[in-house]
Image (cartoon, rainbow, N blue to C red; front, side, top):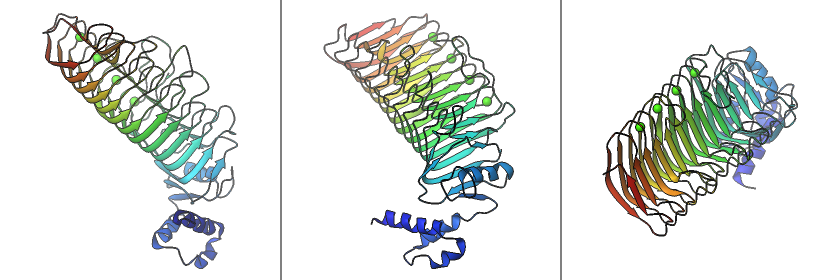
Length: 455
Ligand SMILES: [Ca+2]
Ligand SMILES: [Ca+2]
Ligand SMILES: [Ca+2]
Ligand SMILES: [Ca+2]
C-alpha cells in the first residue's frame, strides 16, 4: 500500500470512529495527520462534511444549512477520502459571509438535482473559495454565483485544485449583469457597483455546456460599475461546448487578465451556427483590457483561439509571451479594438515567442490578427513569431479611421499561408511606420510581405 493510500485508509478509519474512540488511533499517525484530524472538528466557524449522504447529519447540505443560518461559519471542511456525493436536490448557499469549501478531493455529482438545479449555487453574491473538489454533471451550472444588484466592494471567487466537468450549463458562472444573455446590438451595461475577482490555480474546466448554445467552461459577467479581474495559473479549459473561458465586462470598469501555464483546447463545437472560441474577452462601455498571457496554448478551438474585443472608450493592452494558437477554425489570435462599437482608445501590445499555425479553415483574416478601428492608434511589437500554413494571411496588422500605426516585426516567419505571409496596413489619415520588418518565409499564395500606408 502506498503511503498516500495508507494515509487515506487511516483517515477513513478515523472518520468511521466516534470521537470518543479517537484515542485508539493507529500508532503510525504522524503529526501532520494529527493536525489534519484536528481541523475536522465541528466548531462555530467550521462545518464538517462527514458522509456522502444527500442530506441529514454530517452531509454537505447540512453544512451549507449551518452556514446559511450562522454567519460565523466560514469553512465547510470535508473529511478525507469521502468519494462522491450524489445530490438529489439543489444546494444553495444564501449567506453573505465569505465561505471556503475544502473538498479534500471529494466529488459532488449533481446529475440528480432536477432540471433547473446547479451543483453549488450562491445566491447572495458571497465570496467563495473552493479547494480540492470536483463538481460534475449538473443539469445547469456546476457552480453558479449571482451578484445582487445592491452589491458593492469586490466579489472574490477562488478555485484551487478544482475540477469542473460535464455540467450541462456553464461549468462556472459568476454573474453581475442584469441581462447577461442578449442577442446582437449594444449590450445592457447594468449590473451592481461591485467588482469581480476570479483567481484560479490547478483548476480544470472540461466538457461543460452541452445543452443550449453559448454555455462556457468559465463565464464571468461583470456589469455596472466595477472591474473584472482574472488571475489564472495552471488551468485547463478543454472540450467545452462554447468558449473555454469567456470574460464579459460592461458598464464602467476595466478587464485585468493574468493567465499563465494554461491550456485552452478544442472548445466551441456545439452550435454550428455560432461556433465558439478558446478564450474570449468582450469589454464594452468605458474601460480597458489590460494584462498579459504567458505560456498559454489556445489551439484546436472551433472559432478563434484568443478573441479579445475592446469596445467604446478604452484601450486594448494585453501582452503575450510564449503563446501557441494553432489549428483554430478562424484566427488563432484576434485582437480587435473598437470593432463592434467605436469610442476611441489605443491598441498596444508586445508579442514574443508566438506560434499561430494552421488556422482559418472556416475564415477570418489572419493566423495572427491585430486590428485597431475608430479613433485611436495601433502600436505592436512582434518578436520571434511564426505563422505558417494558415488558410488566410499569416500575420495581419491593420489600422483604420483616425490614428497612427507603429509596428516592429523582428524575426517573423510566415510560410505557406493561403493569403499573404505578412500584411501591414495603415488605412487612416495618421502616419504609419514600420521600424523593422525582419520577415522570412516561402510558399505563400500571395506575396510574403505586403504593406500599405507605412514607411
Ligand atoms: Ca459591477
Ligand atoms: Ca467597461
Ligand atoms: Ca476602445
Ligand atoms: Ca484608428
